Image 1: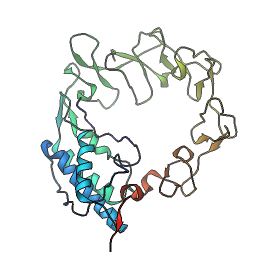
Image 2: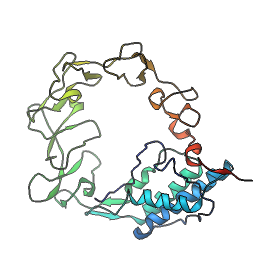
Image 3: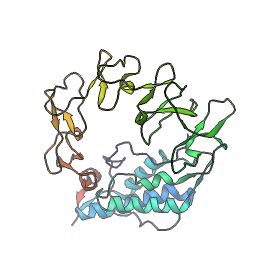
Image 4: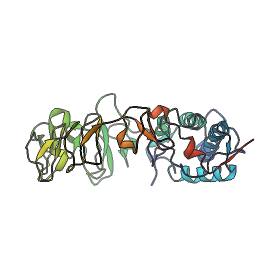
Length: 310
């Protein structure tokens, strides 16, 4: 299957953490457009060039050859071309490669990996009514959403997702700014949670259930914001600070369920932590201390196993 983005399997840490990564012999990446047949090699070179700067700053050195081969393998597993109906953008690929290098040279302090620009390497070319194999091929409008309708049996068609009203037939539910619709389902009409509606089990738009309402069939999807579907199948308030969470193991935004089953406030940057759930940002495993995503120092993961340089 082709993909249109580089995917991170770790979220906030480099997808290759734990592998020997810093490379003393990697060449510097070149700026400018990157041809598609050179993308994997150029990206791997950029990753290693960035890691070289990071690790040398920590007086650590790790094998260059292993860095390059590990990076090529990881990148090759997440990008194998563009979907039909999309076109490769060499200029955007060049920016993606440069930002990869900058991220790693900063020891991960510039944000998440891979950089967001990497998701734009394959640009959609299909408009409403055009044939498509994936929603990735459909050009998105300034407002609303266009999805690839594959339910007709005649191949996919880029189709404007219509906003369902109470009682309308529907194919799914959209949260604000997010419609994760299955490709095998018609995206022509969906219910929006910010209208107080969801696509119920009878495939019609129905009101979101309030406190005590039934959610036995659709689970959390049937409950209004701030509620969750309790085990018995009724919508209940999500616990907050000081409240019991031993059954649900969930807490309101900005809080977490501690070891004894009570919701506690998440910790700010600079406070010790035992896991990411405890932090407002992330828990830096190298310390371990809560940190902002933009400030996390992943040097310990990227350079682990290295020997000091002189």
